Length: 422
Image (cartoon, rainbow, N blue to C red; front, side, top):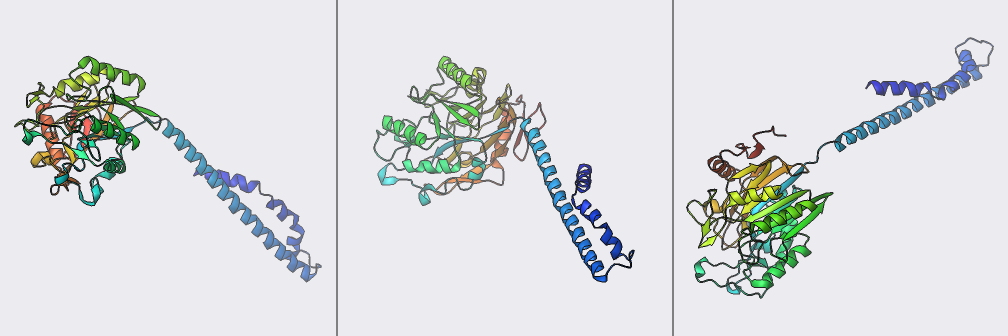
């Protein structure tokens, strides 16, 4: 304010209208009766000229004062921009679990959603779109027809997930940037399914990783920041987390080319009584070694990962911090419209958002609770005002990782116990 007033005074002092007033000084004197000999008409003319000069002067003051004010605002804005330029870069990530939008196989029992899938992410896409980087796990393949359906010895435990290729537009519309295809369903329709899925995602502009030799890693550059992405699973043709030497090398190599490395792991058992728990031991399912999520997450971070997102058990699990890097051991099911149980905790569909600095160090985050609802073929995630996912993940974290340097509040906010929330 002080600078503003001084500027106005400076402008007024420089006005060219003031010499005009001085030039009319003789006429002013006549108008005021100091020279009785002057003609009356001349006096009236002088008064008119006086008011005209005052009007010009006042207008000039207002115009220049406005210009001074505008100039001052521009300086303040520039100063604010300089300050912002010095602020640290903060990046927001959103992560969800398994996605299977709709089934076009078998032909005699297709599970295609209403409105051709357009409503799938309707309740949650504002949250997904708000992040700088959004991640999910594609549970199945994009393939319009054909392929070689997987055969199983026990049909009751065998599910093949094939989605129409056009449904990729729903992932794009929801804001997904990265999609893992390292899981037990990417091989449901053999190589035709794998190849079509990679093609469809790439053509849609979604980064894909998780297939051995064909799509092992991916690097996305966005707003001047390079994000490395690596995805692992124990299944055929995927980048296998059991090969720890290769896993470490892939992560460390991607780290050399990236600012931040995101690791996905399809890991952990299913359908067991303690399926929600992080046991810190090797987990088995149907005779298959499904890995040790606690151990592998740490191996990944030691190799250069900045965050690790898990999925596979179909239910949420605990979250964790290790060396300042975020871990979600399982994000459960997110959008699985058919042939995957959504009963009880299987229907929990959490969205985890985290904020990091440019080096991938955890700042804070949030668990946003969503639950899948709907009839077979029409199931989709809805935001959940009861906060069921928050309560579940908070409880599991406190039980399974009590030493974790992480605090989850009742409203889902996540922070490190070592630092204040920003």
